[in-house]
Length: 214
Image (cartoon, rainbow, N blue to C red):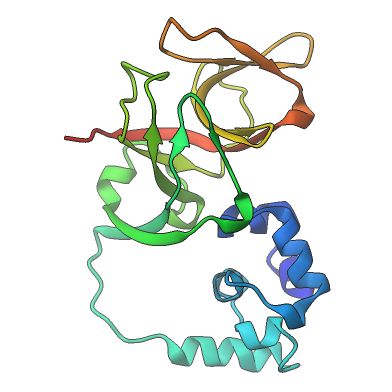
């Protein structure tokens, strides 16, 4: 798609930003008339409109103008930023994911607070709630975690990552092994380590902050 090329986005990167699977992006590109409940969000990422993506207009430039004109004028709090909130509990032991049906909302965080943990722009961040006790005492059940989707390579040993492993969503520590596999570890010492090959593991991003539930 020309709009993806203009922005230097791959199909996988666009899928990551929108919170859907690469398959959902492929379907929209190849079957645009069918549309998707994620079409409007994909359009926002590509700076166009859903009508253009669905083939109802051929004028991408006009679509961008319409998007700009449609934006309401609001007062902006300089210290607040909006990031995606994924309505899906990442099981710290493991939660099965249907990545074609992830609901995404927007939540506001303090820009100065976020900047303590990452310099990545807000569109590369998302938040979600953890579930389970396998990452205790570091992350408790129902704690909110902030995920930096710009970080997808576990080169920093033993950092905490949001991952999809064989269809299961998890929050775990990762460490690359000399044989090319990735060790998946829990902070709960009762949980045994697992090992994944690169093809079985999809890294959503690195957990950069935890908001404790009360």
